[in-house]
Image (cartoon, rainbow, N blue to C red; front, side, top):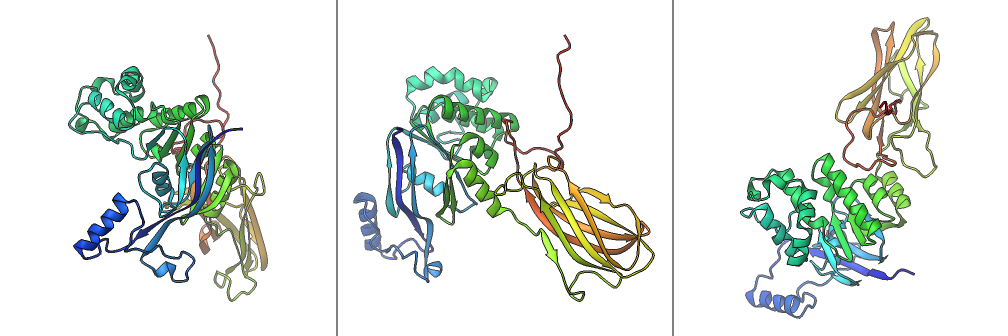
Amino acid sequence: MSEVVIQVEKLSKVYRLGTIGTGYLLQDLQRWWTTTVRKQQDPFFQLPDAQSPNAAQSQALWALQDINFEVKQGEVWGIIGSNGAGKSTLLKIVSRIIRPSAGFVRGRGKVSSLLEVGTGFHSELSGRENIYLSGYILGMSKAEIRTKFDEIVAFSGVEKFLDTPVKRYSSGMYVRLAFAVAAHLEPDILIIDEVLAVGDAEFQKKCLGKMKEVAHSEGRTILFVSHSMAAITSLCDHGLWLQHGKVKAQGEVTHVVNKYLINNQQFKTKQSWESLSEAPGNDKIRFKSVELIPHLLQPDAPLDIRTPLTLKFQFWNFSDDILISTHFVLYSYGGECIFDVPSTATVFQKGLVSGECTIPGSFLNDGSYYISLFVVKDTSISLYDYEECISFDLEDYRSDIKWYGKWLGAVRPLLPFQLQQIE
């Protein structure tokens, strides 16, 4: 049975908003002595009751509240949540950078934290000197740095500029060298915060490959924060979802990620009206219903790029012998038109008209979209434009692809494409 290397119990962190000082020098000195030297609670700031109905209006901000989990040796945990959920605060407490307001963290083994790429770099020093400086600050000995020096340089890809001051590096070169140093640490526990937000596509691939090697080949324990759900799912076996400083879910990583994605997807996928007076339209056309139906691969799965989507709608037509077609127009939320698909023009009598169209799975790229329906007479005259009647999000899915940067393009179809050996 694996040994528990990180134990977090009833962990809370509260920050005081507004003025920091007490307004009196003697009290400020007393606070410094009590909190910094004696490591006790601030005598001038009482920990508020988080359950109090007035907690939201108090001068306290609960960054973390009653966090409990255990990490065993060799496990890789992905920590997810929206901005401000408390992810970075949790990593800083586990890394012993800040102290909790309540609860405790117990750890076993050497801990190295990569919370900010470029820790320990000095702009006036060369790349070679910064490798030694940053490596030492991150916990490596001079002998370890010397042993791994060539490997670090090769990983960074900045060999030609090794003796150039880093202040002349581009931001990409700086990031490459900084992560290369951090990637060659050998701690028992590695804590990483958002390293995938930097670097180009090629370097992101190298970073993820190195992290996977450290996690699965060398058996290190890793806490990994990222907004890339594809990277979290690929690298991690356990997940922890934080929301407003509280644990929303924890457990097997795919289950946690799916719950998080479903919670954060924005939907306006169904609208209907029984009364003509309330229905959108005019004296020629009024919509009765519009609905987007996802064909989910599993009942509890989020909408992702593999999910086929069927648009169904009905509208009342108030004219006889009229040639009607409907345009199904899909937009990204950036305003870009992805496609405009017209229906076959058909002659209709007064009454209810229905339409249906399916977007196949593995066609759209990930992102946020909305649908507009334009009803047209004689293929040229607008009867009614129902704009932004449906909105939805599609999440990414990479399967066995090892790169997790942004996939280019508005669409992402699966087309026949093969390579073959001819000689």
